[in-house]
Length: 195
Image 1 (tube, one colour):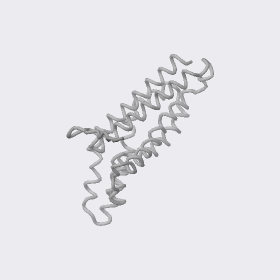
Image 2 (cartoon, one colour):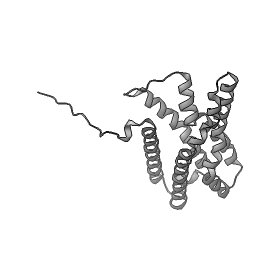
Image 3 (cartoon, one colour):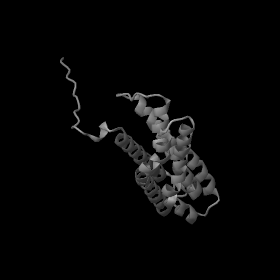
Image 4 (cartoon, one colour):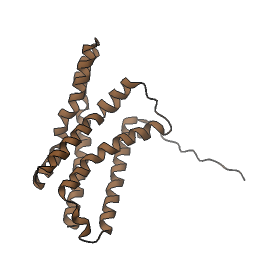
């Protein structure tokens, strides 16, 4: 029997060829999958059994989910073919820790989960609306510190690093508001239909 392999051809300039766009699409896909799974689990619960999740635990879950998923997506992106070569610790630090804000997001998630405990439901919803803007100083601090370290070590590229984070702010706000809106919509669905 003659077996013929089917090769999938992608058009020139396809979004999957661009690493950043592919990562954004993977994050969006994972988030949607988790949201659908959560809604299915909630739908299977008896009417009152699923209501034990209060606003505080829901928003803590929502804050920590990107902190868990983003590093996992980096590992998957690095290991799956075509394997992305890691160009040393400087590239890793610049791309994954600084540009994607992974290190800053862990600190932000820790801070936000502590703040959520002390806020009322209305204040937490307002905090979720402002979360992308509140995240900006957390995002800027590692860039600035890395730039200062570069300057102290004698590299003028540190000056560029101290202000380069400003170029990423529009992307940060778009991704942040997308996550905030999805989080708030799911919260309203849970609140309206399952309480």
